[in-house]
Amino acid sequence: MACKAELVVSDQFPAGLRVFVVDDDITCLRILQQMLRRCMYRVTTCSQATVALNLLRERKGCFDVILSDVHMPDMDGFKLLELVGLEMDLPVIMMSADGRTSAVMRGIRHGACDYLIKPIREEELKNIWQHVRKKWNENKEQEHSGSLHDIDQHKQGSDDTEYGFSANEGAEELLKTQKNRRDAKEEDNDELENDDPSTAKKPRVVWSVEMNWKMMIPVQQRSLVLCDAVPKRILELMNIPGLTRENVANHLQKFRLYLKRLSGVAQQEGGFPNSYCGPVEQNAKAGTLGRFDIRAFAASGQIPPQTLATLHADL
DNA sequence: GAGATAATAT
DNA sequence: TATATTATCT
Image (cartoon, rainbow, N blue to C red; front, side, top):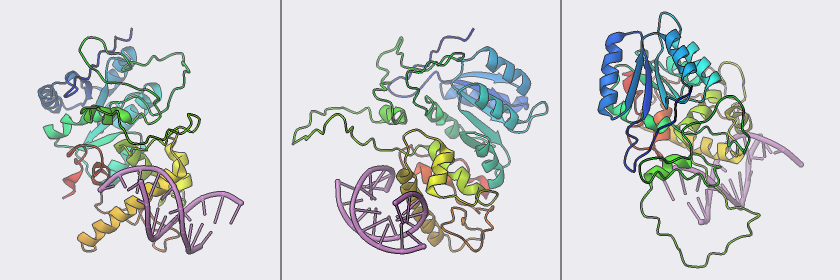
């Protein structure tokens, strides 16, 4: 019953992205629908979480991304998020008027890939396609019964859909590929001392937004339970194939640098992110990471401008 | 400037 | 010795 996957990524923008929106507020739903349509997305709306869940179960593979409100009468948005995460491989973006960091982190902890604070601007919706991707797990030839993947390496219809997953690994390449589809005139010259095939080249790790989020989760929770937001542990919790402890450590370093910079600019703002905590921190009372945001950090990289520059509603 | 790798520190 | 943190290189 699952419908045929039809997502086709044109060379410019993923028009036609199938977005499933869940919100008990009809007005809100309408507005979102309009905005999403203006973004050229295909929109399906639903005002009841329970119904939404059924619909999703019934039509696996019919949507590319889910946009769900947090507060709903029949079912908590987090519950929906949880179930979706459990049963299907779809990116879920939470929406709420509650922009407190704790609320956002809660969403992320539950597995949301992004968190939009209402009112939501169209610009923010334009970028949700970036959350659409194949799961990180490099499914190595292992066909799991049950759910079938969809948005895959198929380029039906339209022209160039450069979805080449050659050797996978990064998987994050997807985004990159789309962006840098500039001429690939690489013949290259110069001495290319190929190493032996056995020692494959070093795939450069691209820290996607999701990965940043994932890294932040343990970092945040450090204040709650586990007291070891260290590279090794974080790596385990992130559970991303191929990622190494070094990768995490290095990224953590960058993150700290980023925070340092931030603190410098924002003259000891009331609350300051002491959450990433290096070694034993005396004031281990994190929890309130004032107003730093991972999005800005993550966004400072590959992903375009306003991608997730959404959380700035804290003021 | 991001990420890898080498150098130190614990 | 292993892992964390910092410095340097690509």
